[in-house]
Image (tube, rainbow, N blue to C red; front, side):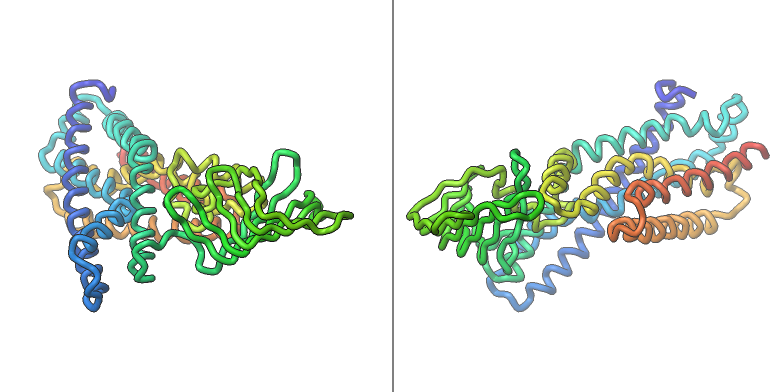
Length: 368
């Protein structure tokens, strides 16, 4: 059965409507509980108003939804398949000579399209809002309305330059004002790849504006030369305030479109990019994970006749399997993040296991 056929469009429409209904219901429940939690946290804070609570709960919601997205799709698919089976429409479809795979093809195509839209359109919005949430949460905890996402222990970052050398930047304190990044007690080291020191700059203060570090009260130390004192020194770099900020935020707060550049930058600078690679590959794999969850739903809900009973088995079995899949994937994901297993294996193993088991069961049902 083709996805563009009348029957394919009908099943796809039912799935998408159920998906939106389940999405709105679960999002409403999550938002309600999150608002209650934020109200509890701010109960002894007279400086926090209800509008701030709504804002921080709203900014967190897309990230929370992203975590339950596969479950929402699975529940929506189970509802769709259960309704089709309960009304005997599935019996009629099978009697017309359509196989289970022909029936599932439009559904899987629609789910894959939803997954692509999620990572390319919704994810950038979700990542931005999650960064907003992290900033608001930091301001809530620090009681500082101007706090930004930088380490309270200062800054320590390394960058690979175009000439093959390495730049190491250290600052005791970091503060952002508009587009400027203000640094205090700055040390800037120029080194070779073999960690041989070429030049060192020690400055009382510096400003990072776009790709320029403007240092004040600078002492310059260079091999074989006496120390030089300068009132001002301008140093060109590839670092930006946004790039440094990404060093202190979770990969979940970085957009799908920005992750490749971030990974390339940190690889050149010598930083570990395992978490970022896991996040990026997980986003690419998410449409296939959604398809795997649909196959699980088909195993439990796609029956020739559900009037014989077994509805409780359908609900409990489907939910239990969904949580088992999530638990297993998180364990394997943790192994990948900690670099115990290769990133590709950590991302794709749970999906492949789910798909193979579901296909085996569906093939058995098809044979019967």
